[in-house]
Image 1 (cartoon, rainbow, N blue to C red):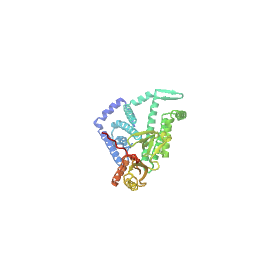
Image 2 (image 1 turned 90 degrees about the horizontal axis):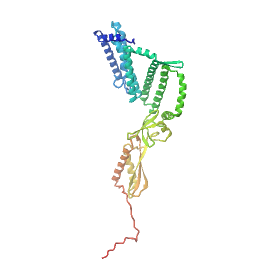
Image 3 (image 1 turned 90 degrees about the vertical axis):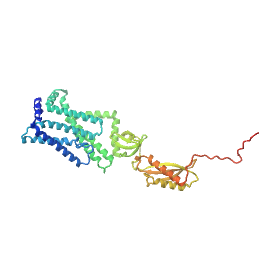
Image 4 (image 1 turned 135 degrees about the horizontal axis):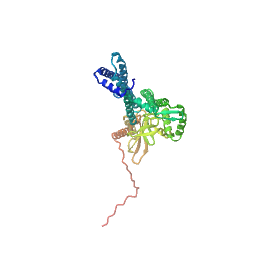
Length: 431
C-alpha cells in the first residue's frame, strides 16, 4: 500500500492533513464513505436473507461490506489524486485505518456467524480488534518494521530448524486468517443448507457439521504449512493422538462418532418427542457431541450422544407422530352402559386436538366396587404441545355428557346385608 512513515514524516503529514490544501482530499474521502454506505444500504435491501450475514451484519453499517467498499473506493481515489495535481496526505492515514476496520469487521462477523451468542468468541473479537488497531498504529508511525526486525533476532534452534519470534507471529497471523477464511466458507455453505426446506432438517444438520469439520481440517493443514511447520511431523503426532483417544479421550470421541451416527441413521430428529432416562421432552438441537432436549416445562437436558446410542430411548414420533392417551371414569350400575359409551365417544371426538382417524373409543375396563369403570382412549398428533391440556378438555367433555344424560358418577359406597332370622334385638329397658 505504502511505506511506513518516520516520526518526522508523520508530523509533517499531520500538518498537511489539517491544512486548507487538504480540503479536496477530505471531500473525496467523505464522498467515498458516503458512496460505500449508500451501496451497502441498496444491496442490503435487495437481499432477503440477512441473518448472521458477514457482509451486512445486523445494521448494514456494522457488516464487512461497508469497510471493504470504502477501502476499494478510497484506494481508487488515491490513484486518481496525481492526475488532479494533488499530493496524497490524508489518504496515507485513511487507507491503513480502512484496512484495519475491514479486517476487524470480517473477523468479527465470521466468528459471530460460526459461533453466535458465544461469550468467549466476543472476547476473542475484542482482543483481535485491539491487536489489529495496534498493528495499524505501529505501521503508520513506522515502528512496526523496527519491532519486527528486533523480533527477528530472537530465535531458537531445534535440530536443523531455526525458529524466530517474528516467524512465529507471522505464521500465527497467517494461520488465523486461513482459519477465518475456512470458517467464512463453512458458515456460508451452512446458511444455504439450512434454508433448503426440501431437505430433511437432520440431513441438513449432518451435512453442515461435516462440511465445517472438513473445511476446518483443511484450513488447519494450510495454516500449519503457512506457519512453517513440517506436515510430515504430524504422522508422529497422529499416532500419539490415536493413543490418547484410545485411553483418555475415548468418551469424547465416542460422543462425536455417535452424533454423526444419529444424524445419518435419523433415529432421532429435531422436533421428535423423546424420553431418555426418565426425562421427557422435545429434541431442539443435535450437536456433534451432545443433544439438547427441552421439556414442556421449559427445562433443558444436555444428553451426550453416546447415551442415545447405548441406552433405551423412547421416541413418540419416530415413524408416526400420533400418540394414544387415555382417561377413566366410573358410572352407576343402573345406567344404560351401551348408550353412555356411544355418547362419550361422540363427545370426545369433538374435542380440539383429538383425531378423528383413528377416532376415540370407550371400553368397559372393569367392575369396580362403586360402579362400572369406563376407559376412554383417544389419539393426538401434536405431543410436543403437551398432554395435560387435551386430557383436561376430554375430562370436561365427559363430565358434561354424563350430566346431560343424567348419569351419576358414584361416590365410594358399601352395601351391608343382614341374614334373615338374625334381626337385632331391641335393647330392653328396666324400671
